[in-house]
Length: 167
Image (cartoon, rainbow, N blue to C red; front, side, top):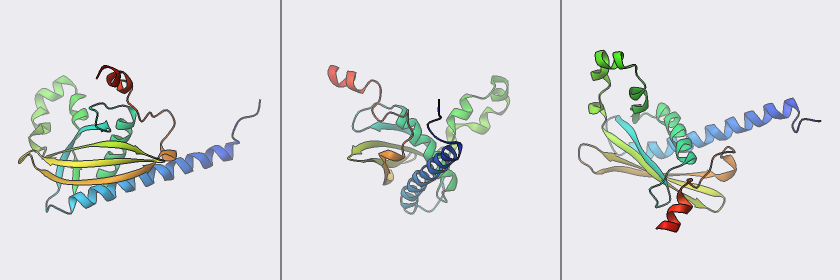
């Protein structure tokens, strides 16, 4: 049985996916930079929810957005990412000794958003909300072509259809 792709074709597909992945990160970085230009200091942000349209549901595409946003924030001059998940995974004895260094007190804003299907693309809206004031620091958008989304990632959260039926 012949492989579907020759080895050189597989390498080309990996490079192609890598460039699409970098392009998605660049689009998120551009959206974050637009938001960041509205304030003068670097903001330490944590993630809120990234939900499908106007539902409160998140799925695998939400996690994909978070991964791309982590990459974008790492390249941003305006934001730092507070990795709450890293704090949760610390060994309990380490938390007892050093837990205060990782408190959420340094967290200044929440980065959250929604995503919407629009033809052949996905529009992702991003909002940064200040914890100090509760006010919207800024809002931005990024568009992602559906063809750039890796296989196995579902746009529609698993419980969305059921929630619509019940709602």
